[in-house]
Structure formats: C-alpha cells, structure tokens
Length: 126
Image (tube, rainbow, N blue to C red; front, side):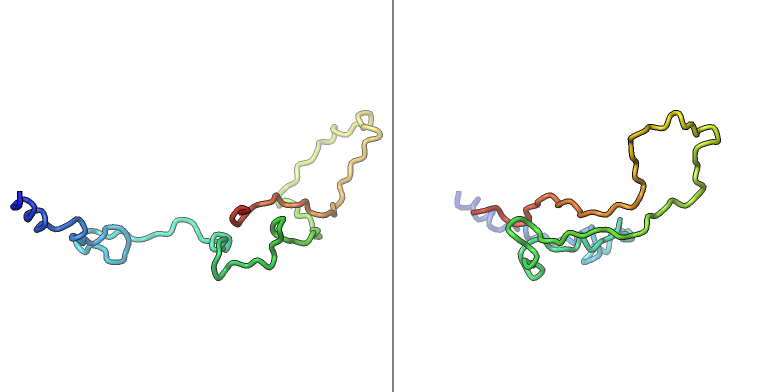
C-alpha cells in the first residue's frame, strides 16, 4: 500500500496544465484560428449605470418612498407624421350621424405626470 500512495503524489494535479484559451484575444492559442471580434448591439448609458453600493452610489435623490422627482409637464409641438395624409372621402360627411352632446377635444394636453411605480433598488428592511 505504501508504494501506491507514492505514485499518486507523483502525478500532476488538474491545475498543473495551463493551456492557452481558444476564446477571446488575450493569450489566445497561436496554433488555432482566431476569428475577428464583433460587438453585437450597442452600449447605452442606462446599461452603464451602477445601481449598487460603490463610488457611483448616490442617495441624495432618494427618499424612503423611492426616487425623488419633481412633477413636470410636457410643453412641445405635436409631431405630425411625414407623408400623404389619407382622410375621409367626399361622401363621408353626414350631419345626421353627428353625435350631439359628446364633446371631443383635439387640442394639446397639459397635466402632471403620474407617479412612477415604486421600485426597490436597495436591500429590504432589516
């Protein structure tokens, strides 16, 4: 039995082999073909925001109910679609089908934005 234990200790372990990787450009195996690298999609600033603790963690705009914001309104010009507008034909107007008493406003709308749903970005209460 003493001879078998000595043979096990002489073999290299699984970490002894350091083969170069076949994925990526850093330390790529030079004996294998390296395909060109492409980035699929694009990175936005929203994806680069940090939501956890660290240097980018800011709590100056947070309250106990969630993110603090001021109600705002949108004052802007309505954008009409570009292209030929297809309207009703000449026989579509019929004053007898007009609904009396129903008021339809097509003007601009001004109002306060609704509250966003509360999201918990941090840990729960302890």
